[in-house]
Image (cartoon, rainbow, N blue to C red; front, side, top):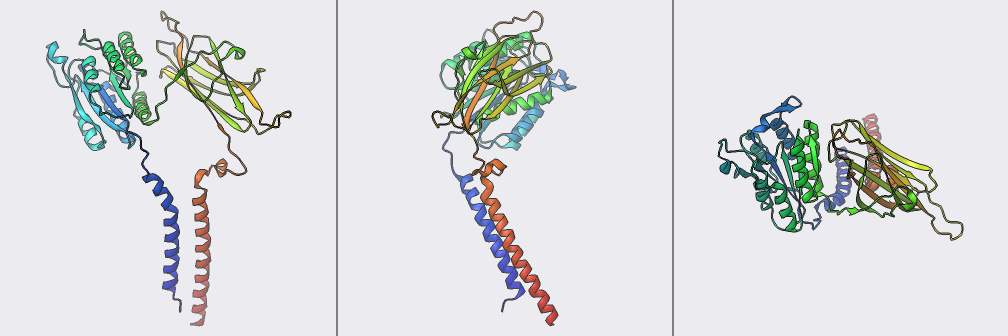
Length: 424
């Protein structure tokens, strides 16, 4: 005879089995090794005396850096091997020779223990000199070998005080070694000399320079650079845009760099077949002083000048770059003459509204980065992902089936209990 306890146990067992079955594929995928070398990042922080200055959102530059580090450490991807090096953190004296040796590795590049790294950062206090060149030399040797990406993120609020060891020359020497090390730089409330030096360091290794005046900007930018180390390495290709679509270079899927002068338009062409989707994005950066209030416009138009879609974004002077993007899914159709999918040439137009500040050189143009991706469009009839379910359709099906079976069994159990109650 089937008792209520046995029936309830059977329902639980069925639910457990179905749930376990649904979870197995996800676990298997998560445990599969990707076979790629772990990316490595070292954050190099200026802890010189000037970091005591209170000009970032009412607090000191050091307080802003500590907050940024804590938030970035919490969000660092598990696969990233992260370390921290300081410069100017220990020596308080006036001896230049001693002060220019003041750099140490605060936390070694390796698997991240967030608690230990945060504790190490919490002990820092603005102290001494600004030996950027010596710190970069030491930082270049802090990485393990291997084929993974290696990135230094340098955060400083002033020029190197240890000349004649020019940090730009140090960066060029590092680049000449061919070890694939990129140096990104961030300037905290920088003056013109600091900006020029940090830009030179970044340019020497193919990195980026960002001017920072607010805590949010610092946190966001450091987090982006750490995340970028975990992304597959993509080498940008130089592309020279034209003044009109008819003369524009033809681009395929990839990452491209160009420069656009103030008040100029740049045109590029992309072939998109029926059933494909064009995804494009552009970022324009200010590598010199510009007036506040600017924007960037990315348009996709036909060869006859009809606009298909556009993306636009604006800035207010708090960031050094502005980005936007667009998507164009080309409908399925066939060429009447060939019965093959018809292709369309899409013209991409990039325009920005940056303007040079007084006394700033207009040439060369501002750097822009254009990403082009042409992919197969979703098949609405067969791809459940078109409805936002992605590859989780099978899990949804299991859950629906589980609910249906559980409902039937629970209904039968309720009726059986009512029947037994009436009999008694």
